Length: 591
Image (cartoon, rainbow, N blue to C red):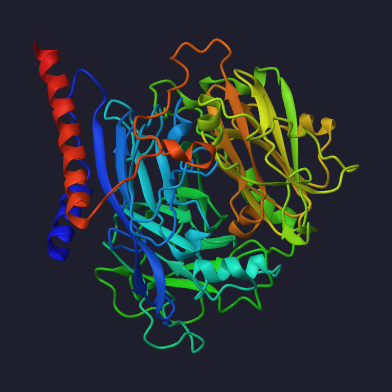
C-alpha cells in the first residue's frame, strides 16, 4: 500500500497542462500530501513538515490565467491550511488559506483548492498558515509564467535556479509556540537554510557532516535565479561570490534592471535575478544568505552557505565569505536599496499593455489607514502584539462564511484608521470595512524595535515611499507617483514608515499581517472586508461546493472518511474529472 501511495503521489503531483483547450483557460492540477518526515538540516535530527515527502516542497508551476487545482491531504496531527501569498485570488477569498477566510483542514482529511491565476506573472511561494507550522517547513515555490504571446523583457535565460532561504530553529514549531505562549522571545535562530540544507563548512565553526546545497552551472550561460525568504523572522542578505545579481522581477512585477552585488530579502519576500556565469572558474564560489539588521558579530554562526560549481571548476571554494556592500550601522544607506527598485514601465506583465500605463499617481486617494506596530505588551496577562492597539483574535467562524450563513456577532467592522493612544491595548476580532473601488493609502508605521515585513492578501500595492520617523500628511510630497514598484510584501524598518497605494478592486475578505511569524502568532494582523453593494455574481464568487464548516456552523460539516486507498482514489478522480471537463470544452469548441 505504501508503495502504491508513493507511485500515485508521483504520477499525480506533476502539472497537467492542457494548452489545446480553446473554450476555456487551461488547468494545472496537483496533489499535495503534507506530512512529517525526519531531517537533519543543521546536523540535528528533527521532525519537519514535507510536501509529497520533500523538504522544501515541490514547485507549483503554472501560467497566467490558468486554473489551479491543488488537492491537499493533511497527514499532520493537527489542523492545516495552505496559503498562497502574493497570488491574487480574483473574486475568490474562499481559497486564500488563512484562518479568517477558511476553516482548517482537520487532521487526516483532504481539501481541494481551486483558483485562477488571473492576469498575473512572477515568483511566489506557498506555506502552512496555522499554528506556527511554517517554522517546521511545508513551504515551496510558485512560478507563474507569461503566456507565449507576451514577451519577457530580457533574453530567455539558459536555465532557472530556485533558492528557498530562511532562518531555522532545531526546535519544531510546537516547541517554538510554547516559548511564545510563555511570554518569552524566541531568541537567535540556530542557523539559516538554503533549499532545506545547512551551511557548507567554510570555517571551523561549522560542524562536520552537514549536507549543503550545491548548484551546478555551465560557464558563459545566464540563469534566472528566484530567491524566496520563507523564514521565521530574520531578514537575510543574499549574494553569490564574485557574481552580479541583475534584478528583473519581484512578486509579479518586472523591475527596471539594476545590478546588485547583494540584496536584502526580508521575511516573506521574493525576487528574480539574472546571473551570468562569467568567472574564470579557478574555484567554486560561495552562495551566502546571512542575517541582517541584527548584531552581525554575534550572529555570524547564523549564516547559510552553499556552493556554486562551474562544470569546469578547478577546485573547492575557500577563504572568507564575501560581505554585503551596505553597512547596516547606517540604516539610511540600507534603505537606499529598496528605494532604488522601480517598475519597468516599458515592459508588459500579464497583459500586452506596458506595466506603467496604469497612472496610479493621478488617482485621488479616498481613504488613509495608518497601521502602527509597537513592541509586544501584556494583555490580560499574556504577551500579545498589536496593530493600532488591537491584538487580533480570529473568529470561530471564518468571516465570509459567517456572512453567507447570517451568523451574527462573529466579528466587528470597527478597526480604527489611526492609532488610538487614549485606549488600552485589547484583544478583538475587529477588521477594516473598506470601500469597493476605493483608492487608499496604507501607512505601515513600525514603532517596534525590529524590522518587519507586511503583507496584504489578494492584492499587490505600489510602494510609493519609505523613511525614518513618523509619517505625516506632508510626506506625500516625497511619493514616487510614476514608477514605484508594485508588490505584495514590503519591509518597514524599525522607527520608520512605508507608504503604499492600493486600488480596492478585488471583492472579498483579505488578510493584512506582519510576515514575521512571532509577531503574527501574537496577533499582529487584521482583515479588509470589501463588498460590492451591487453584487450580481460577477465581482465575487460564492462559496465552493466543498467548503468546510466550523465554529457556529460546524454541525453543517459532514464527516469525511478517508483511508490511504480512498485518498489516492480521490486524487485520481479529481484529476480525471478535470481532464474530462477540459476535453469536453475543447471538443465543443471544434463542433
